Image (cartoon, rainbow, N blue to C red; front, side, top):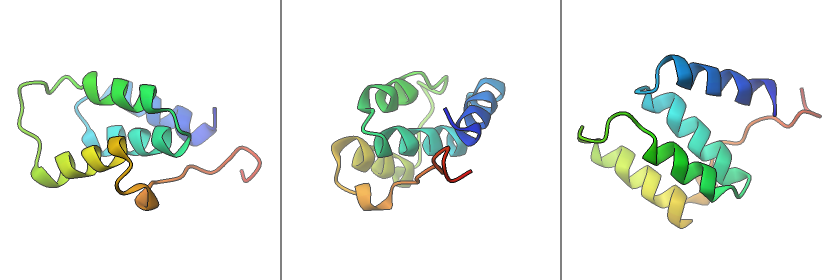
Length: 81
């Protein structure tokens, strides 16, 4: 696991309601073809009963269905660090 990915998971533990961090992790999981992890990140949000903005819902739906994978946030590989 890259240092950036470790940092993002640490930040998510610190602030699980922070969708900016959660979204970056979802994007990274999709980029690695790990849809199980991407779905887990969506489902583990503590904001179950809070309404997410339409833009965020659309982004998550697109990532999980593959309709906008050209826009996926890619983490640096360990070789690039």
